[in-house]
Structure formats: structure tokens, C-alpha cells
Image (tube, rainbow over all chains, first blue to last red; front, top):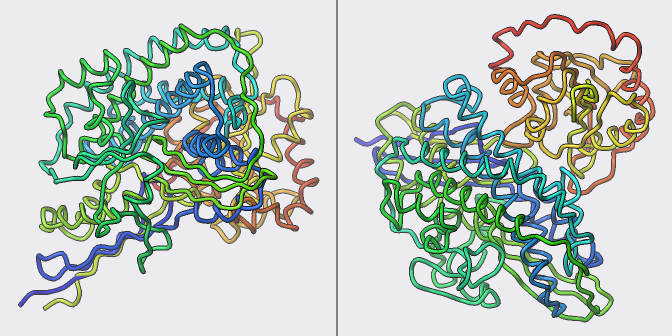
Length: 434
Length: 177
């Protein structure tokens, strides 16, 4: 006679946000997996309506304390699309530099303090620091570089305020950027060492047939522009995103899930998707590193996303150094525009994956509609699907062991579930003993 | 920054723009012009920001929102909404920011201690909040208490603050809060 059981993990740590995970098992069969999430951007969309479009970058930057750039820049690009704004090449390069800063900060934090502990059987980055103080110190120094770059470009350490529709309120001084160069040159070498370190971790043998989705650009490693490509072969303009990908309600979550419009099939966004789709466009050191480490690309093992983050860390340092070296202060730092009733959308790559924004504005410059699709929302369904395949491999332990293994898998996605709390409650239902 | 000009103390206001969670930022802004020159005031949107700065200072004072009804006893200052804790203490785990991000304040302080970058003295001010809705203003009760909170925290920079920092000892229980 089989027995069913429900397992609850009350607090999933080392992820951003609040949610719950419920697992019901019928013997060795996974009967149900539900990842329920509180997703703050839903509130922000309503909050944006009626606001001046010029306020949107500042408001959206405050959606997340971890990745403000991706939120605000996606908004800026979408509004510029609505207004018909064409930015200068100098503004474009500076925006890529801003993304480099956020990727460096976010990837360094996640790799060292949130994800790496899983591979050493320790509970936290604090415990990892006892065993690997040099590596953790190195990671914190990298994280600091990212924040320092954001501060120079964004105007302050917390949510950047220098970003505007049309460009930047003020272009940074060359000397302020050049001052960062010695640290960034050290950081590049450190990022390479970090990536080599994580590439040697003991990864579970777990591969899946993912439909991985990321921006793709003909001339560069896509960060803030491109078309929406996938490893299944589709490639659509950002303007057609909602024809191919859609959000839908599920009963167990306050957050919308995302899936393909055709049957709501799950898909996977994030650094692993980006590396798989755009590896050839990595900067030289990152490309050589990707080719030299012991991973066969494309990679379908979510646990190896930590290596993908490492490669993007290296890329971000390389590109940041190149931009800083070539930088010349420019004017005007912002392109002017006229208000007009219109709509526009944009997609960029947040550290955690593709993020999509769409806005409608009226001829007074007020927002009449806002839609934000964050990466974690898009990954939710994929995480549940992964857990269904992962759970049968880890059922030989007690509930605590199973819960830990579920957390490990969820953390591969670096979910940014919300900014209100970091606890994710997990329920594992095994039913009554037979 | 050379050794002679190195500020001794960092005052960090941590928070977000959401309701009473903004109190740390507001206090920091208000204190910026009140504190002596050897105190540097900075704003942080996540506790992990502190990790970027700690090695520059030998005293750290933090202000953050906290949830009422936590393990703390009655407010430990003249302000009924303001708590003052000397790290290490279990009560810091009740701070709002401790629950707001993957790397909360207790973890940041523990990690810095483990890595040897924690300033010699760490004081944490917790302001009991009531409202944390997206972009909400301060709740009336916190807004009413604002002046007294400022006054109480500003008193930190009195003669007693120049006394030698006390020796610290870290009970193991703190690390497992």
C-alpha cells in the first residue's frame, strides 16, 4: 500500500522574497508541487497609472533593492519606444555600463553568499566564510565594485536617480570612472578565478529539456536590446513578446505565472539561457574561459547556472573596462522628446533573466497603462516543473533532507520573489502513514 | 581617504520607500547635518550594502525599521517606538530588514564578524513600524515620534560616545538566532 505525505518547508532561505512551496507525495510519486509567491510588481503597475512618465524610472527603480537598474532601464526603454526617442551611441554605451555594474553586484552576491554554500553542505554564506574566507572576501570585493560603478553612474548608492527617459540627467566625469579602473582590472582577474573555482564544484547529474529564452542581438552580448530568442528556435521581436509569451493566474499563487501562449508551456530565463544562446558573443576572456572549462555547451543542468553567472561576471568586467577606457564625457546627456499619446514596450536582461515592460501614455505625458513581467514570474512554472523531476531523486531522505534539496534547486534560479521578506514556506505533504 | 581623515563612525540608515520602512533613510537624512565631522552618514537599500563600507570605520550605528511584537522588550529609549541595541543581541533579528532580503542585517553583521571586518562597536536603533505598504507614507504614529527619535539618536554623539569601546564577546546563540 502506498502512502501519501505532505512536506512543508517553512522557510526557504537565501532567496529574495516571500512565498511558499507545497509538495504532496503519493508513495514515491510526486503528486503535486506548488510554488506560491507574493509578487510586488503587481502593485507597482497600478501605482504607476496616472503618474508622469518622467517619474517612472525613479519609481520602478524602487521595486527592488537588489536589481533596480533592470527595472528602471526596462521602463526607460519602453517609454522611449512609445515616444519615438532615439538615443545617442554614447548614451547607449553608458547604459550598458550601468548593466555591467548591476550584473557584477548581483552575480557576485548570489554566487558567493547565496548559491555556493549549497555545494559545500553548509547552511549559509557565514559558514562558507569560515571555510573559504579568501573566496568570500573576494566575492564581497567584486560586489562592492558593482555598487561603486552604480554609484558613479546612478548618482548614489541606493536606487539610481541619474537615469532619465532620453538618457542621463548628467554624464559622469571621466576621472570618476577612471578612478574605478585599477579595481576593475583586479576584479577581472578575480572574476576569472571565481569562475574557475565554481566550475569545479560537484554538480548533481540533472539535465532537462529546457526551452530557454533570452534576448539576442546580432552585434553584442544582449543586455538591454535585441529580439526574444529561444533554444527551441523561436525568435520574435520584443513588440511581439505578448503574442508568444503570456501571464496567467494560478490558484495557489498571488503572482502570475508565465508560459508560452501555445499551451502555457514553461520556459527558463536567466544567465544559463543567455550563455546558451549568446555564448559566441561573450567578450574574449569570458569566451576563452567558457570554452576551456569542463562543461559541454549548451548546458541543460540548472545547478551549473552558477558557472553561467561566473562567465557573465567576467564578461561584465571586460565590457566595463572597455567602456571606461574609451569613455569621453559627452553632451547632451539626454535626448529631448515631445509628449504624445502612444504605447511602447521593451525587454532587457536583469541579472535573473529577461524582464519585459509595456506602457501606454497620454498626450499629457501621464501613464495610462503599465505592464511589468519580471524574470522570477517567468521562471515560476519552470521551477515547479524542475521540482517534479528533481524530487524522485531525493526522496530517500527525511523531510528535512527533501526540503533542503528543494531549496537547492530553487536557488539555482536566484529568485527575487519580493522585497518584503525572504522567507519561503514549503509544505511537503506525505499524507497519513499507511 | 587617508588615515588622518578617516571618519570613525558610520551611521547607516537602511530601508526602502515603503511606509515605515523608510524611517532609516529619513533619520539618516535628518542626522546628516547634525552629526560631528567624524561621522559619515550613508543610506542603504539592503543590509548587504553595509558589507561594502564596514572596513572603513571602527564604529557602526545603524537605524532600521522593526516590526512590533517581536522578541524585544519594551522600547529601551525615551521614545516609545525606539529601541537601542548593542550588537551582538538576539533582538536585532526582529528588525524589518532582517526579513526583507536574502542577506538580512543579522547575517551581514555575523558575516562581517566572521571575516574580521566588523567595526569594534555596533549600535542598532530599531524603530517600531506599523505600515509597510508599497510607497506608503510614514504611519501617523511613527511620524509623530520622529522628532523624539532624532533627538534620542543624536544624543549618541555626546561625550560618552568618545569613551573607549567596550570589549565584545559573542555568545554562540547569536549566530543561531
